[in-house]
Every structure is written in structure tokens, then in C-alpha cells.
Length: 343
Image (cartoon, rainbow, N blue to C red; front, top):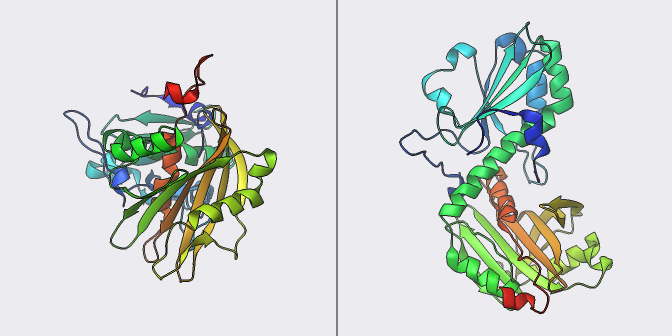
């Protein structure tokens, strides 16, 4: 259980990375379930602050566009209420941000509370002696504030997936790649080869999917953006399109963006861009995560995509991004034993 109170900046420093079943609320025993949809934020704020510098800073951070989606979508959908309107069902929202002017406050600060009224819920209080102090705080720490709410959403998805998951897909991944991964309920195993697994989750008007593939590591040159894109195209060509002979590929119209990061001590490379279907008219955003499995000296990639031509893509994309945080590799084998023998 998380402590009820924790400094916001300590939460931000702990971050490892910054309408879908994976986001279903989990009710506490004997308690109420939180309300609202994923990546929706209730801001409790007075009119002077909302129409002033504080409101501008909040909208600039939480309303910033999600990167690499086809249409502009905000990081969070903001629902603003006056302090006197923060009553009844509004208090049960999953994500709440209070903005308070307190002349007695020595400086601007932010604190977070978890699951006090309902579960799962995060309430952050942003308090300062003046609107100018709060605006300055947001200029310095606004991105950290966004990441705290993003982490809360990710934790909810992880909790749900830990309870409701596809064990047979996890077993296929373990046997094929030697890695542990928890796959949310609803995914189907669409294709399995000795070096490739493809899974998909179909909605009436959208689709989420991911594939995992592995190949020999040939030194640092294997991890350049060009090499990762070429490897991606080799493997995702196994994902068929709707027309005869069509298949997925990386869009040539937009160069993918690559950047390295670390997650729980392991080095990864994120590749983010757009996919197309060779021989047909389909496309959407993708993100892949690549690391080197030292136990096998092979490159391991989790490649995720979304297809949603009519519905907003943000929550579908966040859903596949969360998959990375369920991937675990076994500890190094003891001396005299192979990695396979420890699996």
C-alpha cells in the first residue's frame, strides 16, 4: 500500500519511464470504485487562477499534444470545477488536482495522496502563497506533475493486468524468448515462430497489437536507428494486411525517433514512429523497445502498434506502452549452469 502522503518531487524522481479493458477500475474491499476515464483529470481551481497564469501553465502541460499520433490529442482531458463544485461524485474521480492559494504558505509545493476517498485514486494539491508563486512552480516542475499522474495511470493498468491476463501467451513468450511478460486479458496469439510472436486485441473500431522478435547481437551497429528500423521491417512484414500480399512496414514518410533510456537497471532503446501497410491503405503509430539479452547475446524487441482510424488513439497507445513494464528477464545463471537450465 502506498503511503497516504508523499512529496511530489520524490514521486517524480522515482519514475522509471514515462476506453480499454486494461484500465478497468479495481474497487477496494468494502469501498467504492473511482470514476472517470483513463487520462482524464479534474482540476479544482478558482476562477482567477484558472483564467490567469496558473491556468495557462496547467493547460500548456496537461493539454500538450501526445507525440506521434496522427491527429492532435492532449496528454490529459481536463475537466475544471470550482472549489464549491467539488462535491458528491466529483470527489470520486480517479485523477484530481487541487489548486490552492494560501498566503501563509512559505513557498509553492505539491503533495500527493492515494486512495483516501476511493480506489484507485490520486489527489494532488498544488499550494502556494500567490498565483505568481504557483505559476513559477509549474514552469519549473510542470512536467514532473504530469508524469506523476501518468505513473498513477500506469500502475492501475499494471494492477489490472496482474489479475486479468492471458497466461498461455505469457508461457509462449517465456518458451520462445526466455523472458517473462504479463499480457492483458483479451489479446489473442495470432502467430508464433521460433524468433517471432505476434499478438492482437481487436475492438469493433480499433486494434491494438504487439510483436516480439529476437536476432543475434552483432555489436553496437545492431542498435543504430537505421539498423533497428531495418530489423523492424524484416519482422513486421510477417504481419499481414487485409489485401492479398500486403503486410506491415515502417512509414517512409516520417523518420522514426530513437532515444535510449534505462528501466530497472536495464538499457533500452525506444523507437517511435508510424507504420503503413505495403500494398494497402492502413497505418497508425508504433513504438518499439529494444534491449540486448546478455544471457543469449541476442537483440530482444517488443514492438507495439495501434490502428484506430476513427477513434482517438491516445489511450490505445498508452495501453501498449504499458506492456514494457511487465517484461522481466531471468537473473544470470549460476556458474556451471546455462540460462536455459534456470528457466
